[in-house]
Length: 76
Image (cartoon, rainbow, N blue to C red; front, top):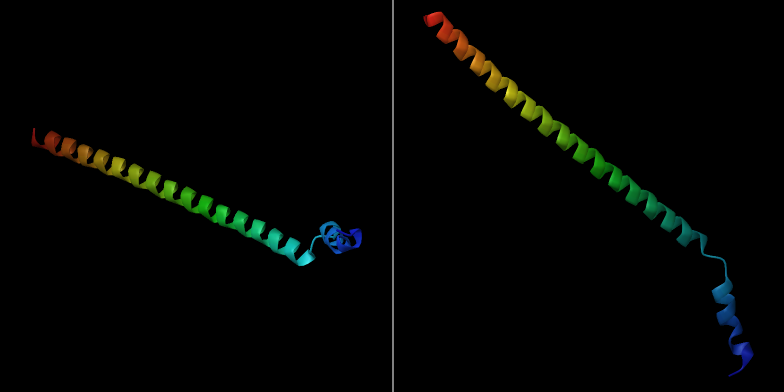
């Protein structure tokens, strides 16, 4: 095997990275970060909504309990 046959292979291995491929990689990382941001926002929104629903349920039960106490107090 002759050394001059390896010159194109060595030149390819030492070449600068393709700027288009580098930009595509950067955009993919940015897009992945954007997706994770949206996932986090939706999870936070879902948890907040569930928390509000639980609070509303608790307040409704308390109101019903107070109504029944008032009705029982008015009967006496």
